[in-house]
Length: 198
Length: 80
Image (cartoon, rainbow over all chains, first blue to last red; front, side):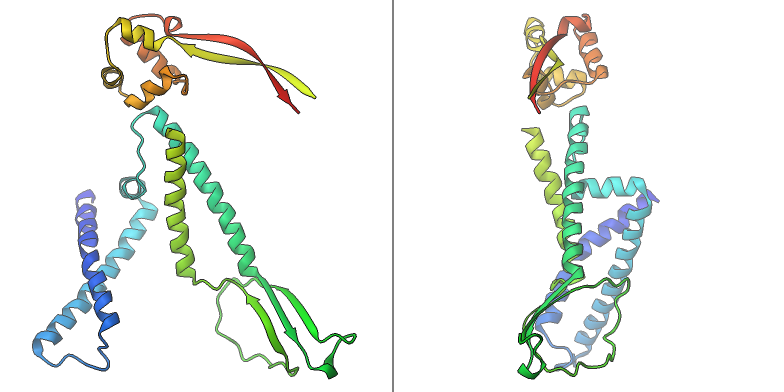
């Protein structure tokens, strides 16, 4: 199993530049507008598709292995995060740095949770709909949804309002948030470790 | 209001004993199985080794653990 995992990991790592090249190519070359005409290009296009599918399948398998296999996780993630535990002092510092990293990440997650739940909008309403003679309204709201749902055909508001400022949750995509948190974990750990090692 | 508490301060003579045995920090680190940074930290008083490492050091120098490490009591004033 270890040999298979090692071979698959190498395939994954060495395939990464090819995937990046494919991504750059598909971004810069519109295949819908200019479909490949020669047999050579069609074969190359099909091969790239198969490679991408294999690489995606491999990514899912390796992610699952990282979650469920302790030894594999230890082997791969310690290298990726530059964790060094050569003696008892470094083991102790690793613990302290991991605690700092975990607590700062938790603080960021709580902050992001608040930002994703809060909704604030400032708008002005027509003078005939004014409340106590005031036409400017601040609306505060809390939103929590377990599942992302498609936009519903809810009854449209009849009051015409001019929105001056609207904040309806995080403007960043979930993928960007997850990637940011992964990067943060690695940076926070290594920064704490360096400070402790001084 | 200040509160006086008793704390134990661990000091060591590792650099003296190491010099007596004419051994470098790097050599000692390799013999004991730790990094040189750990030896530097112990000698500088920045790191107190575990009991296991303290015994390993004592055994390496063929001496008693008390010959390397000593404990002093000191009063620390803490402000509430």
